[in-house]
Length: 560
Image (cartoon, rainbow, N blue to C red; front, side, top):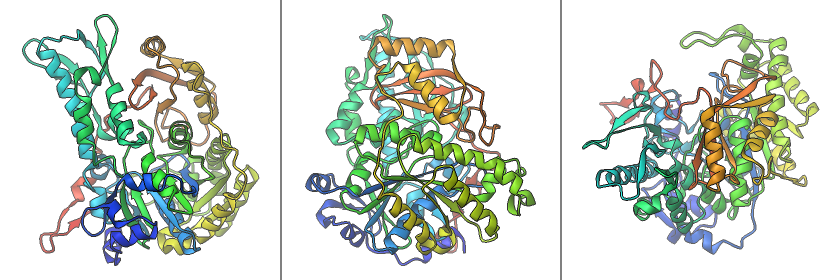
């Protein structure tokens, strides 16, 4: 059966029953049909003093075209913990329409480890992403309208930093020309998941906090160098109105009925890569265990989880899971190449201890990255049915040798929660260890020192270089009092370095920073590495080509 057929074959529980499993009241739900609902922040107010459950992060090695199964592992682990009798919830980001119609074709898990309803979650869900785009572009419209009507604030058209946004990958919009009536200027689009508004939606702790953040957004600078904020354009209140319901977490369920929050969708490579703080805040007060996923590898989503999200929320993770597959490790070890439409080489699917040993170095760095934050690590070896048992056991043993507290083989894709029970036991045991969680850097450090710390300790770089533009932006951030903010790195997810071709565990490289963006509303500085685009492009054969509606049944086909 295909993923979508499996998803549709499940008899799902009414969303009120799923909420009741967490102790949420029906009056605290805003239902969107039978299978999904938003959760009122009244629930958080009621549960504010409730004890917190154990917070478990799922991250992974650097992704490859073969996939590591981070989302399926998160879902499978949550279901496995539920099968062991623990009240559990999983918190995930909403899939982006860009990858859904571009590369992935869907982002709700796969096999027997999925969340449902798949079609809704992959597409519009409850409309949050559209609200983000509308709120973001309203500010863009207000800004250009201000220029057209006389520019009372003396905004310098050449120093406007606020882009427009779109939820679909479209490389043609990376650089555009704007304006009429003599107020023409250049501009750009970023994908919605890279929007500062999306970042704020995920990091806000309340409606009041979101409103304050929106007002602090810097859209550009005056001719005299003064920052111009959304509050000065009179737009922040309207932006907040458009996001009023979008701020409320979305509740759905896994194929086995385990509660799942799917809320916000910042990318892990160009944004902070984690679901909303509010989802976690409610889940942690309703469950014994909360499993949450961070985007891409530990060098990106997990590092930002520890140093941006946890710094803001105050929540401390009890353990982390690093996901790997034999095939992906072998690919990192030079075991072969992957070509679209071609069978996988035997060096990736069959026994290949040499490539496995070389590729394991990538996993070793990711284990070290998590341990650098004082968190116990469990390695999840996401297994295929034909994986050599001896190699699976070698990865388990070697993982423990290099610092993981345990490693478990998981078959959740094929077997659902039952296939993740060994992983669930290992994770539950790991959370019993005393936590010594710590941040990687002090936000009071100079901007360059924070960037250099991330680059050297998380990526293995020997040094960092800064383009002239980045030097100017760092100096400006210091001048306007934004130097004591955490750093959000934007770099390729395909390598520990900035170069996607460098697999395994590269070292001795210099990380190039081409610009530093000031996201005052989100509350961090984005350091952009060379080669990074904030608006992705579609591949030669987009996934959208196979997505459509079956004329005989009226059902969606092609999502995966």
